[in-house]
Image (cartoon, rainbow, N blue to C red; front, side, top):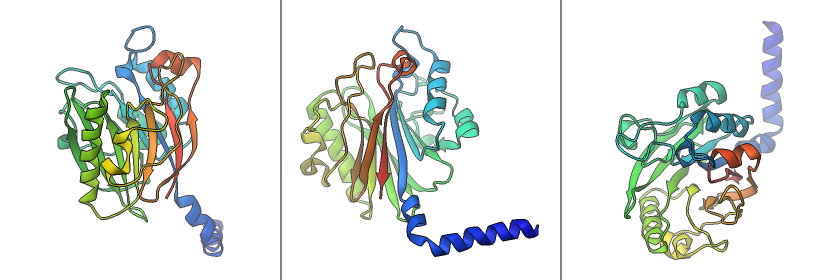
Length: 264
C-alpha cells in the first residue's frame, strides 16, 4: 500500500509541475470515419467479420471518436450489422447515442445508418438526432461532450447532389447556431468530391468556417475522390490526416477509412 501511495503522489506532483503538457495532451483527439458499405466488400459479399477485423486494426491505438456510415441494413427494420458491445469490450469505444429516439429503430444502431462511437473517457451531456431532407434518407447525429472545453461532435452522411448537400449542411449549421458557441468536429461521408470543397461546405451556408485536410478515400480499389472528411469548426484544428490503405481495407468496403487528429 505505501508503494501505491508513493506512486500516486509522484503522478499528482508531475501533473502539478507540468500543467501545460497535461493540458496539451487533453486537447488532442483522434478521430476516424469510415463508410463500411453495409459490410459489402469488393467481392459483393456482406461480411461483418471482415469489417470487425479491420476495425480491430483501426482501434489498436485508442480512438476518441469513430463515425461509421452505412452501418445498418438498408431496409426496414434497418437491423444492426455490427457487434458494438464487442467493440466496447475490446477497445473501450461505446455508443454515443444509444437512446432509441436517436436511432432509426429498436433493431438498428444508427440514424439512417450513421453511428457515432466515443471512447469511454468522454461524457456526452446532450445529443440530437437530425433528419436531413433529400430523396434518399440522410441524417446527422449531434452530440455535446462535457470537456473541458465543451465541444460538439457531428457525424453525418450527405447526399450525392450538390443542391441537397447545401440544404443538409444548412440544417446542420442552423442546429449548431441554436447552441452556445463551442468548437465542433464534423466527420462522415460528405460526398463532396472537389478537394477545394463546394458551396455546401462554405461559411455562407453553414454559418461558420469549416477547415481540414483533404485526402482521397473513394473508390477503395483506386482512391480518387475525397468523399470522407474530418473537419473542424469554431477553433477545432484538424491535423495529421491519414487514409488507411491496405489489401484488407480495399477488400472490406468501397471506401477507405480516414483519420485525423483534432486540437481544440
